[in-house]
Length: 206
Image (cartoon, rainbow, N blue to C red; front, side):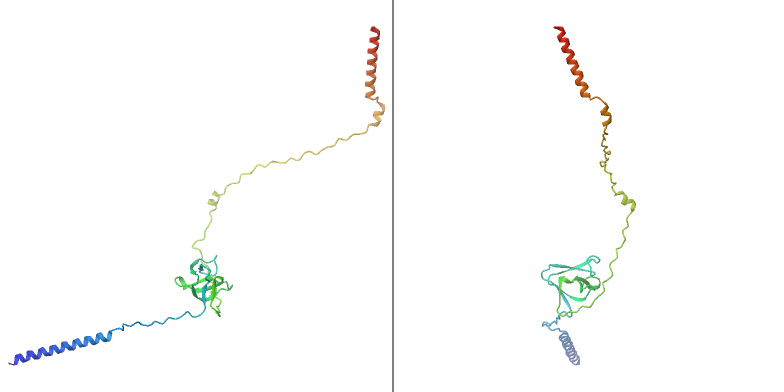
């Protein structure tokens, strides 16, 4: 008669242990349960000087340094877009801004294209070193000479100056003409003699 009592006792003890285990598991789940409500987030505004691209400018290029000739363009900013300002160049024409996504996370923008927050005082910042080219281009004089087109000389008309004009000079020979018989008088005399001879011959023939 003792064995059935022991079996019943073991059964009740086992059920008690199982019940306690389930209660412990439920308490663990209740402790680890996360709240289902929405968690409010805290958002802050930008502190310090801020630049804003003018609304009438569609797009502004930003550069790696304060020059469009010495530094490459690294990105753009659109109309109305803002960015924290870090400082000015020595000529005060360029402003350094925070520009994530590039080495150093900073870039330069042309000051006349942006509006600075009121009361902002920007410190002067030295310009970064200019990028050096990977290789210095050299010119092969032999190859360059192959592309030089020789110039053909143009034959231009030559100008030969005319000879100097010599004006004839007439010398007065009054003394020689005074001793000579005028040629007109000689011709007139010969003609008169010829006419006279013809008249004599005509009269004799009659």
